[in-house]
Length: 362
Length: 252
Ligand SMILES: Cc1ncc(C[n+]2csc(CCOP(=O)(O)OP(=O)(O)O)c2C)c(N)n1
Ligand code: SF4
Image (cartoon, chains in turn blue, cyan):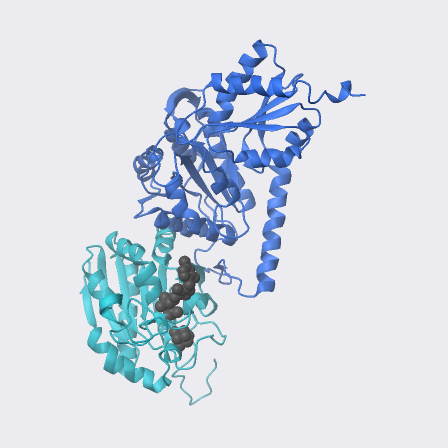
């Protein structure tokens, strides 16, 4: 297959088109604007819908409309824009219509800057809008993975009638790497059986997020939670690296996971028994696997480009079985392998006598 | 309904209208507006290809009253949602039904830009000069001096600004092709309102672009008057601020 030297943002956009995307609605914001620009050119060429909306609020509600018609639809934005989209995300989740959201995170809070960040883990993973819901959140670490996860996001969104998001930082959005693109899939010709689009020879359909009776709303919430439980059961994804004989475990997603991988390799060269787990799905989180690793671990080190957000989830998984340390950079700064290596060495020393592997315990 | 020999059917429930009671207050003209839209849908034979977008406001349950597909938007976002629907279903008829808080306050950006883009949708805009659903607060359309629960001493234009005239405003947008204001306060005006609604839907069917019909509507409950007084209020108080007429009508 042909390899292209392609930018993360453009790769995601083209992968979405090839996944049968029928409509894109967006608003410019760095560092994701190339997604919008790619769509502006390609979608009309293919006779598909593209609108540059007046705001992220409008964009997400256009997505909501097209999603109700059962079309493959997406938008992309970056941190401040996602804040504006949260209203729509909540309505979309409550209506159980599928769509794909790409969040290329930048430094914050506030206007912050346009440098890469992971400070919106909480925003997307924990609280993508008001009410009890969680979108599926996928975190690529390479351009190739961004392409593959884009395709997956559309399939998962359709399968579960849910929001599937790609959560990456500006680094990956802007970076060029050689990668393969999937072949063009045809757009879906028959709409799903829940979509609106004209009551021809059938009863009218309504798609809404309102359940005025608390009993009904609770029943709906239970149904939603059941669906999320199924997703937790079936859709956990992560990558492991150098876990063989590891007593220390580094956990990082996206770019920090990638930097951590280099650091783990360097640490191994120094004889430190360390491995890496890189969560790919942030919701659902690879909790079980981490929990199992914690049984025999001396310690964990979480690397993030924020003040420690995924850290909470790692701590929940580890359940107090061993120390969980954190090393992070903020405000658009990316950790370097040397810094992570130093944090690994520190954890190694600090836990040297704290805990022996299970096998060696009396 | 079946007619007996010698009988002539002169009035019945439109096919596009569901056979249910509405939740609207007695004397509220939301019901009349619904009926007019349903009659137009019947007359144009578009029930099976129509998708409605309900707002947040008293008409949030509009989907219960129409026999066509419906979605319910977030507060003010109906024109954006309708845009999403229409762009992927260009051969379907998409209309929004919105109150004045919804359309002229929180959703002002969405309606303006839908009009600017010439989005080929139809907007039914209910101007009752008040926030009905939340219990009678001041709307952007509230008349100067008018008492509401959030302007208890009457709307003071010094601190709360002036009423917004949406038809005049949207007529300025190049993408809008049919913009009209009508009233529901007496049978003559109701008939005129229906004609305008029909033209607005035809406008979309012909692919002309954005159309809106603003309907001056009553809210006896929150105006705290009888239904009859409410109709009088439209005639004597609202008409001077909101003159009726076609603000734009481009047929091409
Ligand atoms: C984001 C948001 N803000 C506020 C509300 C509360 N709310 C519900 S209906 C409404 C006003 C509706 O008034 P209008 O659009 O004039 O319609 P009417 O009820 O008069 O028909 C408001 C403020 C909401 N549902 N969502
Ligand atoms: S509150 Fe006003 S607008 Fe709402 S249904 Fe009652 S009369 Fe109609």
